[in-house]
Structures are given as C-alpha cells and as structure tokens.
Amino acid sequence: MSSRQSYAVIGTGALGGLYGGLLANHGFDVHFLANSDVEHIRQFGLQVESPLGDFHLKDVNVYSDPHSLPACDVTIVALKSTQNHLLREILPITTRGGGHVLVLQNGLDVEADSVAVVGDDRVLGGCCFLCSNKIGPGHIRHLDYGAIVFGEYRADAYGKPSPGITPRAELIANELQAAKIDAKATDDLLLTRWKKLMWNIPFNGLSVALDASTSEIVGHQDAVVLAETIIREVHGAAVALGVPVPEDWIQKQIDATKKMVPYDASMRLDFRHGRPMELEAIFANPIKAAASVGFEMPSVSMLLKQLRFLGDRQLMQQR
Amino acid sequence: MSSRQSYAVIGTGALGGLYGGLLANHGFDVHFLANSDVEHIRQFGLQVESPLGDFHLKDVNVYSDPHSLPACDVTIVALKSTQNHLLREILPITTRGGGHVLVLQNGLDVEADSVAVVGDDRVLGGCCFLCSNKIGPGHIRHLDYGAIVFGEYRADAYGKPSPGITPRAELIANELQAAKIDAKATDDLLLTRWKKLMWNIPFNGLSVALDASTSEIVGHQDAVVLAETIIREVHGAAVALGVPVPEDWIQKQIDATKKMVPYDASMRLDFRHGRPMELEAIFANPIKAAASVGFEMPSVSMLLKQLRFLGDRQLMQQR
Image (cartoon, rainbow over all chains, first blue to last red):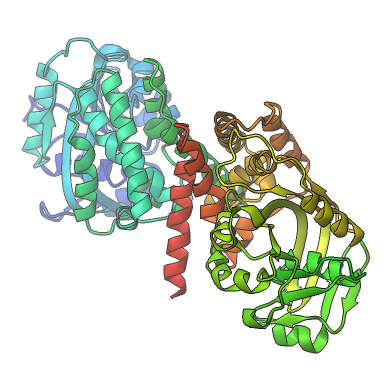
C-alpha cells in the first residue's frame, strides 16, 4: 500500500466527491478540499450512491483551508473552471512535494490556469463522461457512466508530436482502475477534448439559449439543423487545428442524442440554479484556438454572445 | 368629394384601425373587414386616441364576411402577414372593380400573396413607422410616429429600373395626407423595405430569442455586438441584391435604438401574447432573396431557427 500515490481532491461536488470517494474507499490516501459542506462531511462522512456499489466513508480527510492540505502526489482539480482563480492559492500547497495535477474540467485549455501555477510539465488533463449529482451536503448520487479519458497536457500542442502515454499517466490510470474507476490514459488529449466539445458546445449552449432539454432540441426540425450546423463548425475548427476528429463524429452526436433519455445538459442546470456557466472554457477558448489558425466560428460566437447576455442578466437579477 | 377614392381596410388592429379611422374621419368612404370586434364596432363605433387628435366614429362600415364588402378603389392590407391566406378570398371581392392593393405589412415580399390574387400590376407596398396599439375592441391608441412610405411593388425588381412614383401612388399619397396621415410615395420600395429590415431583423429577432427589450440589447456589450453583426449581415444582403443602403445606416440603427425609450419590439409582444410571429416575412424571405444571388446570412438563419423552435414550442404548449 505504501507505494500508492496520495491524492488531493479539489472540490467535493458530483465529480470530486465520486472519484475521490472511490479512491478513498479503496484504501488510497485522499485529502479533500471542500467548501460549504466541510462540517457536514467531518461530522457525518461522505455518502456515495453508485451503480458500482453504494458506500459510506467515515473519517474523511476534509479541509476548508487549502493551507491545511498536505502535499500529495496527485492533485485532482474537480472544481468548475469558473472557480479556477482559487488554484493560485491551492496548487502551491498540494504540489509542494513535486506532485502532478490532473485537471478534470469541461472545455478547452482549462489546464492553462494550473500550468500558470505549477508549470507546463506537471499538468495532465482529462474529460469525464459521467452522470452524477450532488444531492445534498456530502451526498453524491452517481447515476450512470463514469469514464475518465486523460493524458498529458501541453499548451500549444497542436501539430506537435504526441508525448505518448507517459509512465505517470499510466500509473494514475492503474490506480484509478484499482479504485473501480473506468479510467483510460490517452496519447491525444486534444482529440479527446475536441470530440467532447462537439457535444458540449451545441447541446449545452442551445439548452440554455432555447431553455430546452436535449430531446426537445433534436426533436425539432429547425433546432436539430442548428445543432448540426454548430457541431459541423466545431468539427471544422478541430480539423483546421490539425486534430483528426473523423467526419462521422458529426452525425454520431446527433444520433446519440436522439437515443438519450430527455436530459438537462449541465450548463442548463447551472443556469437554472443561478450558478455561473463555464462559458470561457466551453465556448471562448475553442473560438480563440480556432481563430489562432484563422478559422472563424460564427455560430458558436453568436451562441456565446447570447449566453453571456443571459448569464449577465441573471447575475444582475440575483443582486 | 365624389372624385375621392374609396378604401377597403382589411383588419381593424393598431394599423388598420388608425389609418382607416383617419380616412373615415376625414370624409373618405371606408369599408372595414374586421374579425372579433365587428359587433362591438357596429354597436359602439370606433374610438381612436391619437396625438393627431382623438376622435370617435359612429356608423362605421364594418363587415365580418368579405363577401359583404363593396368593390373599392384601394384595398389596404393591414393584417399580420401570418394571415395572408385569407387574401385569396378577400381581394377578389374588394378589387373586382379593378382597384389597387396597398400592402402595409412588415418584412419582405409580403406583397407576393396579393400579387398571386390580383396580378403584378395592381399592387403597391409600404412600410409603416408607427407606434400604435389596439387596447380593446374598436379602441386604438396611437402613441407616436405614424409615417407610411410606400411605392410600386414588382416581384423580382432587383436591379431593374424603377417605375418612378406613379400617378396612382401620388393620388393615394395625396389622399392619405388629406386624412392627416404622414404618407410619402417612394420610387424605391426595395430600399425602404431593406432599410427597415436592418432594424426589424436584429431587434425583433433578438428581443424574442433573448426575451429582452431593445434597451437591454443595446445596453449589453455582447448583445449589442451581436445586433451589429446581424445588421451588417442584412446590409450585406441588401448590397448584394443591388439595393443601395448606405453603409452608415448600420451604425444609425444602433445609435437610434440607444436613444429610444425601452421598447418591446412588436415580435416580442406577439410572442408574449401567444400570437404567431411574422417569421416568413421578416426572416425567411430576406434569407431567400439573398440566397438567390449567392449571399448567405448565417446569423439571421441561426436566429430564424431559434425563433421557429420557440414559436413551435409555444404553439404546442397552447394546445
């Protein structure tokens, strides 16, 4: 057991609570940074319901002050990227022993904020394919899926040779798998991220702009054409950047969504609950990356402007 | 008085009620086709509040059955264009003596439905710059403005020499002016229509898509850029079609809207009250016209798809 890596998990939401909980439940040394539910978790522990098996953790290492966190081998960033300003304080603490950072956030270039703190060579990033909710303080309900695909992150990696699957990525993958997490290391993080953006951009964006579920969107003749236009634009950006997303990935996003149960995309949930939307990570960063090679994304840009208007108005109404 | 033309006014809403009422109040022979408020107008007359002077008309010639209408020299089409299927029944009655049709509807090529009934050479079209509401049965409140700019309509007139201001247009303009209406005949209806579309398309469209007043739109940094993008696209379409809208008309739409009092665009009112939106006239027809010369309107097309989704959903919810 002593050869196992220690983990800092930043955030005890649907994602950090689940993955960190699974690691702890399988004997890993896990330290959580939590916010509002620190006291609850200290007193009552962490409750996880999951198709992998329900479990309850007593005696969770949970902290509200990042300065109380120990140095860990791996820091899993499981915050919303709208909270990334907090990383400037947190990461120097958890990585002070030279540990790595695994950024499990939606969008593109979300790793840049971690790189700015710990440097380009200590950051991995990954996409989660997960259906999980936090249904109360220290209480996670994992509903379905749960895969993590992750790999080495390099700023400006477009067109450069892949570093392959590094030993440290392999080690993390093995440990996550030992905790029953469906984790897979990839030698092409950009491909993984852009493939996921081809769903996230149209369906998160339109779900807020149209106040609609995914099944309403793919069930309407004009909305589904609009979704496809957007998906095609994201695909075009990926290809322009040299990311080899196959052409048939476009139609697959529509087909898969038609087969899904009616579903509220996470951005719609954020918007409905008055939480900030991850607009920079999911929309602005891909637009910026595409623009760097002269590829314009007019539909995605229009959608982003609409979402900023809606988000800002909601913020004003909350005041 | 006997040399004056007779007028059939199709619709007794904010527009038909006001202009038809002004004509009748100034001694013209006016015949209204009304829908829900026929009985009310028969019994109580037509009440108009206006900065031009309030007035009340007793003994209004009002009909619910188009077959009761007399032949008139001029038929003013003052329906929403979403009701244009009714013209097939109405216009053969009112124009059977050879009369002309003046189409006062929003959008582009709204005259085509009248042309299909009475032929290409008997139709004029016009834009109204009017702030008026129907506030109850047979009760019009005219708030501000009121200009009509109208002229000869020809299908496929792009790039063809203007017929100029015809004697019949001049005659109608003179009679409308005699009824205190700020009417002006133009030799370039397409220019008038496209200039108006440069406001109608962005501000009607975004007001529904964002559920926002015009002042909210021009007051938000992203929404105003989006509005300008759309205005620029409409301008590009006009220019591609050979319609000489000056470049500075783009910025003028933004500036003028910034100076307006907070205002609900008419399409927003239609949507809020569950009435069909004039999507074909204001969005689809301009897109079609632009496409005929190979000019694409991606932003306007995206907006149209969103509006169709929102409109169709509302229709389903009403059932």
